[in-house]
Image (spheres, one colour):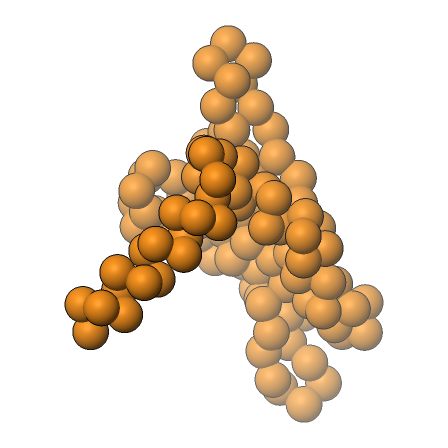
Length: 106
């Protein structure tokens, strides 16, 4: 197991190529055509809010826009930012993730 973790870590370091974690994340979201919006604090140049949604989720939302469930989870990540999850429901009572957002404030 240790060998697998070491190879995985080495690949991640090679893939980052000197970019910060946030630059890596924004690059990956753009690479896979995610819908992404963010806000920055102009004084510190840090991201305060980050919203992202998969392209497939956007298509599902267009088909089933009637029921949306939103829930916020607190202090479960490294930066202690609330994570907002938006979930939709299809006509056959199946649920799907619409979008996620890290928020500075609720």
